[in-house]
Amino acid sequence: MIKSELVQKIADNNPHLYQRDVENIVNAILDEITEALANGNRVELRGFGAFSVKNRPARTGRNPRTGEKVEVEEKWVPFFKTGKDLRERLNAS
Image (tube, rainbow, N blue to C red; front, side, top):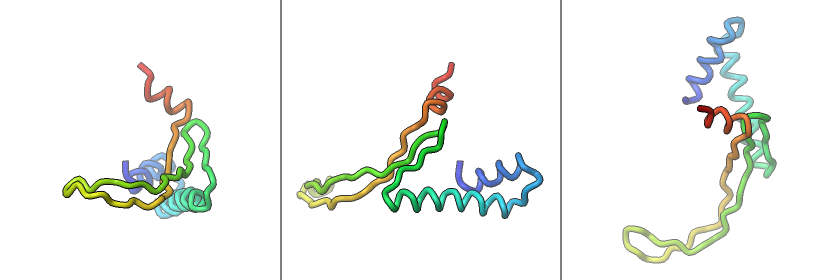
C-alpha cells in the first residue's frame, strides 16, 4: 500500500472528512515520526510497532563489480520492530 492508497482508504472509511484533510493528517503523522527519528527519539505505536534509529559503524566493504576494497562511512538507519498484536495477526491461522 502506498501513501495515496492509505489516504483514500481512510477517506472512504470516514465520509465526514474531506480527502484533503485526511491527506494533511497522514502527512502530519509521517512528518512527526520522521522528525522524532531525526532527533534520535523512538516512536512507539501500541499494537503496531516501534520505530527507532540504529547506528551502522564505518567498515571496509568490497565493490562487487571490481572486487576492490571500499571504505563505507558510518550511518544511521531507521529500524522497525513489529508490535505483539501485529505479529499475532500476521501469524494467525
